[in-house]
Image (cartoon, rainbow, N blue to C red; front, side, top):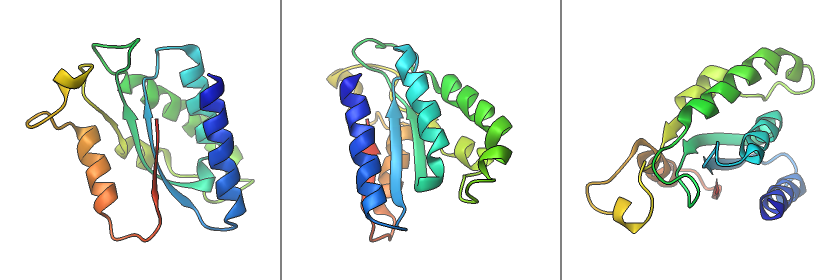
Length: 144
């Protein structure tokens, strides 16, 4: 958990140091594995005005090996939609919930190397490839 918080702090600091430049971000999450995963997503959504969000991808992990929980990402976006009008008072750059929902997909539902390779593409892997291939000079940050 400390590592995740440090990553968000460092990412936030690097973004703030760039001034008005908005970083391109894709978030991969094994949400539901631990409560802090949902808390981190809520925190990310509160700061989503600072990023160009290009994807929210539900993944497996060592502790969530056989399914992804895209439904929990969508649940958090639904909650975000209820407070977005208040967030817009502070910044007009908060993404529309429908746009976030369009960018929400799942990765591989299996775990480990047997779940990767030829013929095992997912909506998540395709989204990452599309974003990486965009004609955009800014780096693409993939938060895991």
